[in-house]
Length: 395
Image 1: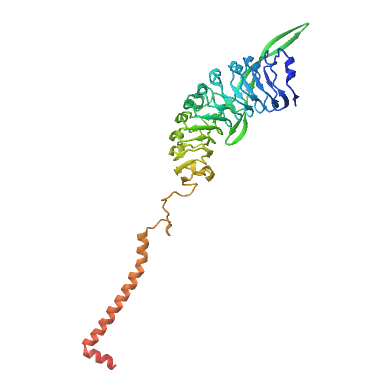
Image 2 (image 1 turned 135 degrees about the vertical axis):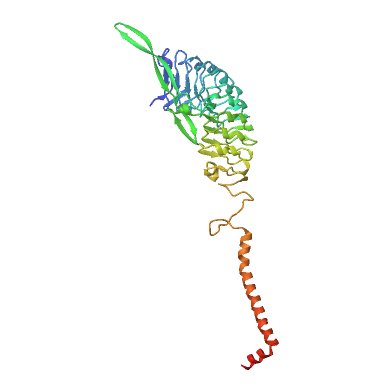
């Protein structure tokens, strides 16, 4: 395990390395501004260290840089303008730091091949720049846990890589060039060689933070949670049919859940909790057959939860905090009929029960009437027929 400052790298003016991975160590101090100027690095991974300070301007001299990972290194300050010179970047992870300022528009203008942008858990503010919609290769967008405000750009449907149902490859692989020294006799020569580097990234997947490597290229994620976003959920987001995870929770979103939400048929995780969404849950949500995580809690939703095997399989906690919401797995909706089983397993109407209860009454009433008629018939005959009367009395 490496410890101490990174200043030792400044002694190497021209380094043959193609990538540098010193992650998960005890490195301290700032990132020096000298060592990158003459290097031809393709990958820099310094995440999970005790570094501090700002991102040095010299990072902009790395024209071949494709992956920059400085997650959880206690960095602060704004993103250096020089970073926009690294036009080959495909993976940018600066999460879990204290970076400030706005998300610069050039992030969407300069990096034409960006696959993953992770700025999670920093102190960025301002709006989401609409230029990010130009990232047609972008598959992972994580801006969660910042102070970002404004509305969600409606142009997100231009993120065409998220609209495709498939993926070109499961891994995100980079080819890097490095120098090999050849000692022949008294002379030393240098020749170039190449290698491959399979990148990996920490992603919140179904509410759990996990490291993805071999299947990173298959993920298609938008996480804008825990910010100050307002306005409505743009309907255009339904065009991203390859999207697997959508997390817009803990914002100030209003309006209704878009009725086209059912078009996101690859969606496995949906979190819209803790907003101010209103209206009914769209019936199209019943079409999300791959959905494994759902959280709509703490909104102003109302009406009946659509009936489907998928939506009723979630715990009631997925819907709690919506006072007007009803139906399984919550309480029954007003007006729902309560049926009672019959002996044969069916249901019986109130008319049937009344008829069954009235049958004994008619039976006993008929018996009483018959007894009265019979009694007075015999007695009348005795009064009229004197001989019968004497015969019966005499006997």
